[in-house]
Amino acid sequence: MTFLIGAGAGLAVFVWIVTQSPGWSPFYLDNDGPGVFDAFVAAWPFGQAAILFHHVLPGMGRD
Image (spheres, rainbow, N blue to C red):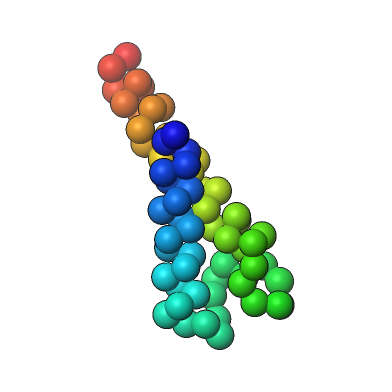
């Protein structure tokens, strides 16, 4: 569930960037504009970061 929340945040950031500057985005990995693969690549790190910040780092602080 944590990953999905983080990935949703990444997807929201991707959509915001695409709507703000439709001609350019740092998330475009190909030349055909935004697509599902570009959205997945943008969302994946946010999901991983959510797991890191919510589960891993607090556990390290308790040890």
